[in-house]
Length: 277
Image (spheres, rainbow, N blue to C red):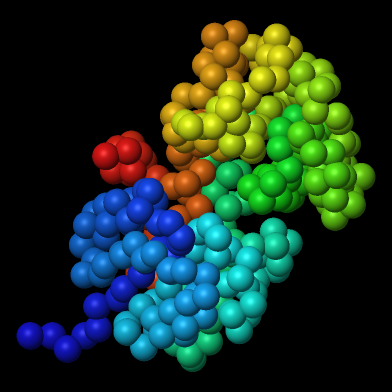
């Protein structure tokens, strides 16, 4: 028998039963033949710090963090990466060998990597990006688009104040447009991104005029339930390149898995199938 520790990781949320991360991470563990485990953990907000500080003692090498803990975990961590600070949230925690806790955010990486994989001909400098929504997910999208070299981001949100706050934080490359004019920014864009929950199963429809969609555009939706939203279906119908939201979920998980288990997994057809299982 071996006395080598079996690495443990997991996802912490409240609730967490809906998370696809366990089946995804278990697929990678099996694919790479790693004797590790990935466990979903329902943790109430008042217990978060106790759980985070206890897990390393139980053999955990790290965890993913989802709603509502993404901001709170940054206050518990000993070190927070610059990109997590920029996003104002963390989704990946690494328990380091020196006993310290590192909080990171891989959402922006997941978004832009998914976009490049799903639309390999997309050129960031080819034109403006129309971004719908200004919530937590939007911060990762905006930051990654700016870093990629998108010349202008036309941002529209139902509550204009939230969009203007992002403009203050990220600078003049962002132009805020009233929600009632959201359809207009679509026709000016080379890339269209929906970061809202509108169109998700159980949520209201995305009621934005889509007649401005043109075949040369790339259209992506962060929603992956359903996999093909009304926005993506409309875009596909006019010949746009469409990128669904599942890939962002898969790609954002790659850096954490690599840090925890020492292998960099591929996001391929088998990975998608495992996440949808």
